[in-house]
Length: 227
Image (cartoon, rainbow, N blue to C red; front, top):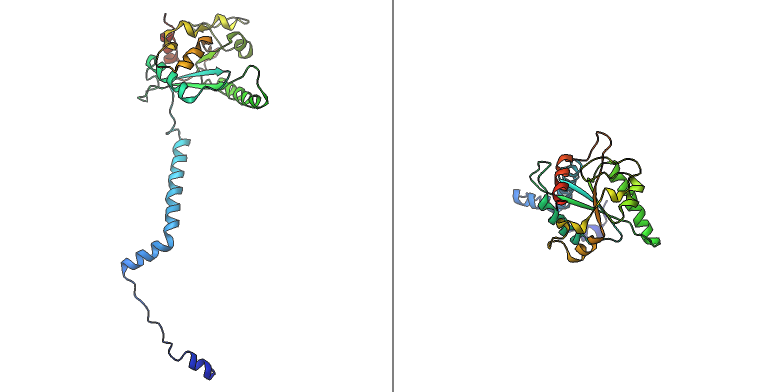
């Protein structure tokens, strides 16, 4: 039995009348308590869609020609882009995607690396081996073609003829400073000067397995080495 005090304390308390929410109030109330779940779900769906498109290769830009650029130090992406854009003028849409893309992949391999640079060089060597295994790059821009050929034995003569064992890499390579394609004013001036120390050579294939767009890449190479 309630005490007299409690009776006095709650003497004016009345039962709250039940409020009937309008449809608009229900929507606002639902949004107030669930908006972050909705926003999180939308963001998750966007990320999942992007991941699926990437896995399916629908977001990947497939180059018509791929070039491996072995550098002593890292060349800025913007400078490399000027080289790519300039060389694209010699290429065509070899893969039929209605885009002309020449991709220059940079592999940083210092001559006398510091401890920190040794890690970068090691990573570049691993990446280059992966590139060679996957038959990614058709052309190579290198400073020492003899050393490169001794290490990897993948270069062939400019006309595509496969060399005999022990052929020097310099017999397969062409000095970049003799080619107009690498002297274009569109190329970053510092990079253009740097390329004077470089040679360009094409890859040879001793089996039926070749790089993508093989015939188009050979056509591209023939254009850039024209005197």
